[in-house]
Structures are given as C-alpha cells and as structure tokens.
Image (cartoon, rainbow, N blue to C red; front, side, top):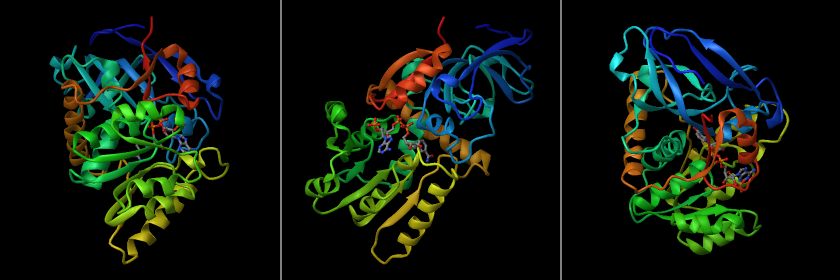
Length: 350
Ligand SMILES: NC(=O)c1ccc[n+]([C@@H]2O[C@H](COP(=O)([O-])OP(=O)(O)OC[C@H]3O[C@@H](n4cnc5c(N)ncnc54)[C@H](OP(=O)(O)O)[C@@H]3O)[C@@H](O)[C@H]2O)c1
C-alpha cells in the first residue's frame, strides 16, 4: 500500500461491495486517489472494522445505504499523509479517528479535516477502532438520551456485541447496574464486563430479567426490534426510557429496507403518548447532522471522552480479531458467525 506526500499521488487499495452478495463477493481494487480538495486530508488507514451496518448493507438492508457499488466501512483510525488547501499542514503525521458510514475499508481515503477527532498518544489504533462508532453510540445513548443516573439499572440487549460491550463498560463505570443479554457462549465474557448475563435464546428471558429487577429498570437499549420490542418497553419502571437503535431481528427479511425502521418509529411515537410516565426514543447517530458545526462538536466531545477512558484503562478494548484489509471477506464472515465478543478489526496488512 503506497504512502504519499502532498506532492505525490496516493494509490489506494479499496474493498468494494458490488451489489447484494455473500461476504466472498466483496472485491478488492486499487485506484489513484485525487489530490485532497479544500478542507480535505488523505488519511492512511491504521484500523477500521466490521459493524453490524455492513452485514445489513451487503443484503441491501441498511436504512440509507448508497447505491451499489460502493466502498463500505463505517469508521476509521488513521494517520494524515497529505493535506488539501485550507488545512493546517501540521496535521500530517498525526493520528485521528472518524465516522464515515461508508468508505473506510480502504488503505487510504479522502476525508474532511473537520470530521477528524484526535486519538490520544499511547492508544493503539486497533484499540481506538473498537470505540469509534461503538463508543459514540453507546455514550450518546447512555448519557445524552437516557441520562441514567448512578445507582440505576439498565438492560443492554446484545451485551457481547461491539456497541453492547462498550455500553456495558460505560454504564458500569458510571455506577449503573447492567443486565446484559447474550447467547450462553458469551456469558463469561459478559460477566467480565461487569453485567449479569441472561440468555436471549431462552423463551423466558424477559421473565428472568423481571426477577432480577422486580421494580422495573431505568433504561432498555434495544437494537433487535421485532416483536420483542414490546417486552423491552414493558420492563421499564415509571420514568424509564426505552432506547431503540436498530432492527437486527429483520436483517434477513426480504422487502423494503426502510419499512422495519418506520414501523418502529410509529410504535415509539404511539407509546410516548401513553400516560404511563415512560418514554421511548429511536437513537440515530446521524441525527442533527443538518447543523454540521453543532453535530461535529458534540460527536468530537463524546468520542474524546470515550477515547480518554480507553487511554486511562477504564475501558478494555474488545478486539474479536485483527484481519488484513485484503481479507475483508473473512472479517465480514467472522463478524456474521455470531461467535464473537467485541469488534472484528480490519488492519492494513502487509
Ligand atoms: N442507530 C444508530 O445510530 C446505530 C449506530 C451504531 C450501531 N447501531 C446498531 O447497533 C447494533 C449493534 O451493532 P454492532 O456493530 O455492535 O453489531 P455486532 O458487533 O455485530 O453485535 C451485534 C449484537 O447483536 C446480536 N444479534 C445479532 N443478530 C441478532 C438477532 N437477529 N437477534 C438478537 N440479537 C442479535 C449479536 O448477538 P450474537 O453475537 O449472539 O449474534 C450481538 O450481540 C446493530 O443493530 C446496529 O445497526 C445503530
């Protein structure tokens, strides 16, 4: 993979999602990158990773994915190798993190300098990668949306996942008791994170949670959707908050990719009108982006806090595997195998 200076051309290796394919249908290509435009930098990827979004995108099931073909990759940690006009050249050589939604499965990418968030010295790129989209999502849901207080109790569905494992750790650090759902194979890992595990394959799961928290819980974080969403809602105590943030249950359904999310929106809206003192929200990391300055400031503040907790050893990075970019298909397959705890990280390779 070729490096660059401001005066030479960068040849980027990119992984392309050509259409609805199995993971082994991903393609690898190289192309010269245009010089960075005003406000842009060239970022050399040091780590990226597999998010649930790519599992949905390869099925054409992500809510607002671009038309095929495109380069997937939701977030990245990398080093600036060239700067465009209007960007401080002193950024060159420094390491940053960014959320891109697509485009990060590449050896190099063009990115707006305004979207870069510094990574503290001493934090390895693969460790930082585990908390970029996962850390922002977890932090904002816990502290901005649900605003759960120390001493509270929450339920985290999918506590072994990328977002889930980060959310458990942030909540425990904030003095919150966590009940985490996961398949039995992940219960030891979930316990180590500090949560009480319950098996999501157990038909009595919700009854079990109720026995663990008979007064009801302060928040439920539900990325599964589907019929179980009603039961998540019913776990809340008065004043509690349901945070819905995905529809994993409908990943394999055929049909319109927006419909499952729209159904959830309608349901949450209705629940908010019920006079029962609970509230229901859909979290979307991209909400508010129409006011870019505020959006970027908030994202940067939140990611900086999470990266600081990582640097201080409060958060333990959950790296499921490190796989070279050229083997992105294997990375996606592993992430989809339902056997991992944490994040499958993609690294540059040879
Ligand atoms: N709204 C937003 O802005 C936003 C931002 C980021 C992420 N998200 C959502 O957050 C969720 C987690 O993302 P991630 O990247 O952390 O994914 P991940 O690392 O792949 O973890 C997924 C988790 O969900 C569980 N899971 C997968 N399919 C499931 C199903 N059909 N029923 C029940 N549980 C299931 C997995 O359990 P097993 O390991 O047992 O399969 C795992 O615990 C996704 O739904 C994603 O769309 C939303």
